[in-house]
Length: 330
Image (cartoon, rainbow, N blue to C red):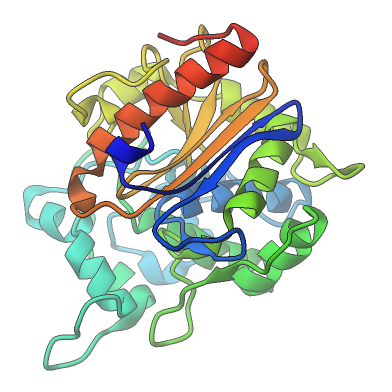
């Protein structure tokens, strides 16, 4: 499985202990790796802390925190609807720009700028027209949504994203290394794909999530928030949507009746796992019932086809979980 999926490093925890850890392609335990969209799931966990503190209201319209996006595809949507990626599908005129990875990466400075320069992420978010349609009806994966949520979080908590993550989560995990998040040219965090962490520290984060938000003798993420991630999603909304994992050629273990909640992929209740996924084959699977966490970082030669790697890896991880705990989702 590791050879077939361009693995950079891989770790498995069972009952809090490392049962496998390996590094390839020059990676070491001290090297951070780009999470890509696994960053979204970390952001979702951090958002739960702000909700618990009363600083962020999921039922409030996003424009209540970021009025700059009035008139865009996000106007009228609640923070909760952004968490769950159920903003109305953009109209034909807006769709290309709304789902345009190249556009958002250019705005972030990841790709070479056009001759007129880049507008930055926050200006770019203000350029998407309001679609026809009703929010909350269907899953619609738009990568830039998490960056907008982080903007709202910064407004609500009066702290920048990196400081929030450090104070609320990273300093409490017992992390071996600092995490860091990439910024655009205007010093704004690119929280859709931009977090970088080491393999062991991501596994610590996963262990905390597996144990109801508790680690090192302290409650880090509210247990109620993690329970809601695992049970609050709507499989029917996912089934009606675009951008779900049904795009893969082969089914993922536990895909039947899956949902998406607070930037986490959640298997059907018959499986009971939840996961963080990222472009190119980045993957973390959390199985609370088995008390297991597996994290895989990857450098795929063709990241846009990383779904094949993700399916293969998920099946391999399912086999590992089954061999250690007797729980399989296939």
